[in-house]
Image 1 (cartoon, rainbow, N blue to C red):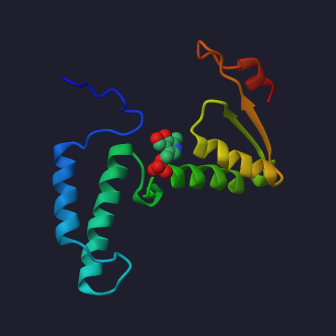
Image 2: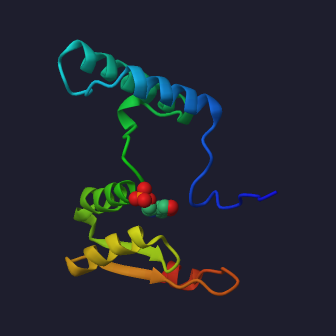
Length: 135
Ligand SMILES: Cc1ncc(COP(=O)(O)O)c(C=O)c1O
């Protein structure tokens, strides 16, 4: 029997999620930005999902942003955080073992005018806490 341990990369979909997704994809296919009935139905489903996620996380619906995947989320978080705090300076600290999407975003910031510190991680996964403290 094969066992799947790579949940870091992707996970099997939970049956209730699959059921909700299948129903939505099949029946609520409108573009949520459209003003017609089909679009407004999709918008209602989207906003309902946003409220559910917000409740689960103890957040407000306005704080929930759905993205298309990991790279887009990384870019939104990293470029957004730097932009939001640029008055305090542009210094990004990351580790050498982050996903390439994170490291590529940091490399892009370094090519602009940000300073980027990449904390090395040893074979036993200990990070350079001294370097982190002094960064
Ligand atoms: C931190 C991180 N960023 C980006 C990705 C890539 O995600 P996507 O293929 O959805 O862009 C992954 C995938 O595992 C990830 O873990």
